[in-house]
Length: 245
Image (cartoon, rainbow, N blue to C red):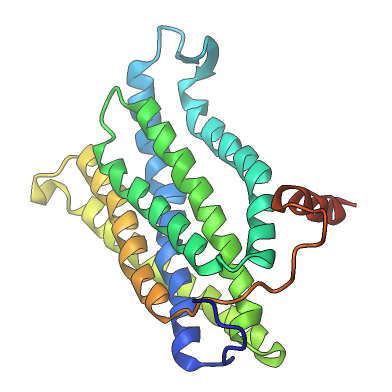
C-alpha cells in the first residue's frame, strides 16, 4: 500500500535506494562497456556473408556495426517509451511496483545472455534491447524516488552517495570478471565461455542486490495528480516537449 506521508531521511530506506545503483551499474560496466560488444561482434562476423553483412528484414548491417545498431535502436525505444514512464513515476502510485518490474525484467534478460552462442546474434540483439530499455526504465522510477526519501537539503548528498555506490559496485564486478578472463585458460574456460559467464554475472548481481533495495523502499503516493483531460501518454510527451524547448 502506498504511503501518503512517509518519513524522509530514513537511513535504512536511503541505503536501500543507493544499493540499486550498486546493483544495476554492473550492467553498464560488464555488459555494455566491456564484454557484450566484442563477443557479439565475433559471433556476428561468423554468421555474416562474404561481404561482411547480416540482414534485418532485408536491411544490410555490417557485422562490426551490429552492436552500435542495437545501441541506437535501444536509445530510440527509450525516447519513445520513457516519457510515458516518467509520467507514471510522477502521477501514479505504482512507482515501486514498476521499478521492481523493470529491474527484474532487465536482470533476467541479462542472465539469459549466458545462452548467447554462435549463430544466436538475433537472440542476443533481442535480449540486449529488452535489457537496456528495462535498465533505462528502472532508472526513471529510481530517480523519481529521491525527492520522496530525502529532504531538499539532503538530496545532493544522497544522490552523490548513489553515484559512489554505482561506481564501486559496477567496478567491483567488472574487476572480478577481468580476473576471470585473465585466468580463464587455467580454469579450462575459453574466451567465449568467459564472456557468457561475465554477461550472466551482471544479471545475477543486478537481481540479487536489487532485492535489498526493494526490501527497504516504501511504496509512495503520486507526487502530483494527473491533470484533468490528460493521460499518461499525453502528459509524458508534453513534458518531453517542454524539455526540448
